[in-house]
Length: 149
Ligand code: SF4
Ligand code: SF4
Image (cartoon, rainbow, N blue to C red; front, side, top):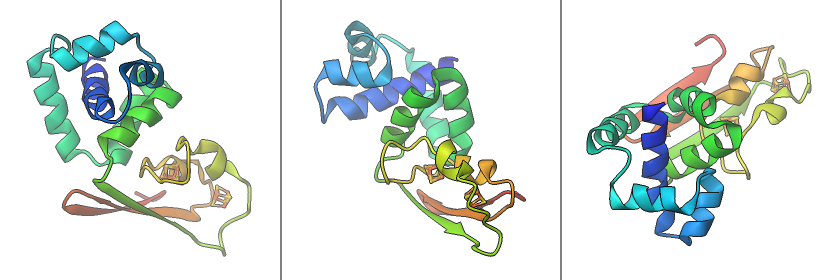
């Protein structure tokens, strides 16, 4: 829980450079005073933030997603992940037409609010035929995500 809170605080810092605090608070599911604490560095602790930064550097989005979703819920987790990996991730979905049965589960599972792929891997997990796979470039590494993974 502390890790998810610290990751949310890191996202809030990035968001606050581009939008008013009220909007940051609304998107992150917290009140404005909590966002102010995040920005002043009162909470979470410096140690928790440093740990979150280390995790963020080492964990690609599909690794962070399950924790964020579990702790923050799908909507807030999607917002947090989007800001945490902004400009650092490139994700490309591949679909094997021979295996795709057009069930639509991948679309239902996708938490992205728009067409920008977050590299979370949910669509790959949701695809029961293994038709869907993902190539994720994150920082200096490239990952292949498939159901067999
Ligand atoms: S397309 Fe797949 S990997 Fe990309 S955000 Fe949606 S569910 Fe996640
Ligand atoms: S979940 Fe898999 S089989 Fe279903 S539509 Fe998506 S890619 Fe096709």
